Image (cartoon, rainbow, N blue to C red; front, side, top):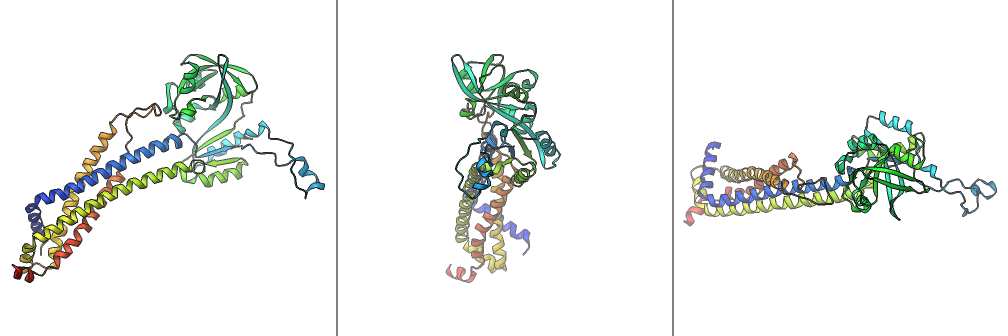
Length: 419
């Protein structure tokens, strides 16, 4: 039979039971709406939570780990070469923290086409003087421009500007918790004491809030040159080189390559933060599982409605087959009904899902732990909409195939004789 005729008959059956049709379409619409909204919200939350760590840490960290001296005097004596050595007299020294020939290493990294950028860094343990009390803290020497472009440093500065670290001599940015303890604000001068007992005065030019309270209570930032001055170190004293790659998946292999090439320690982001990738994968899996379950439930709804429609339309099916319609034609009619419900419900679900996501995106989300986040995070990835539409089509297709196949096998003689 002609497709146009089959479609007209399908439309007639749809409109004859329009309430049931509407219920089935609403089921699909609701499923797709919640599927889109759920995945958009959960993916946005994943990006937010991962960004709290991944955006701030390098893909590869090059440094010198503190290790015991491998060559002790006893091991160099041939007379005791085969003996059990348990005496270690030479300890690690501070010079091991510095990266040797750091300028040549940074130049080699700069010429590596796989690298997006890098930032040099060093850390000093200091005491912040608060009257008669010394607050233990950590001061990181950074390049504000590189930190801002590679690690979103500026996103976590709630007051002041990071560029002032390089413009103003002996300046510092304090963690919010640390600034509250010291009762200081921008423009104030604080005093610190190094581990060697030397005192320095620094001007506060900014307040930093990472969202992790324990870090904000002890963390501070200054320029690389300022920290080198505090530590009484030369301008080539660097303890960390933080590398950002164009492709994060290359980090493990490149870390091993850099270890051998530069004779330093190198740690990749996957090794350092494996627990965050695991958590993100599990949350994503849960989101997809719930969304697909909603679609399958909608498919069962369509299956039940088509089964009821076939039972109620036995007479119509018998007349169609008696007037020359084949079983294939009858099957196609009911497949048109199922696909129509799926496509219509799916398109409405996509629009409502986008609308619901937009509404969630405007809901205020204010928390002291995340000062840069003002509303709930939403990820408008087109992939979610494509997956939703594809699943809507296939779910309704298979939900309609079994009842349609059943309808195609109905014997019109038995139906008419029974009447």
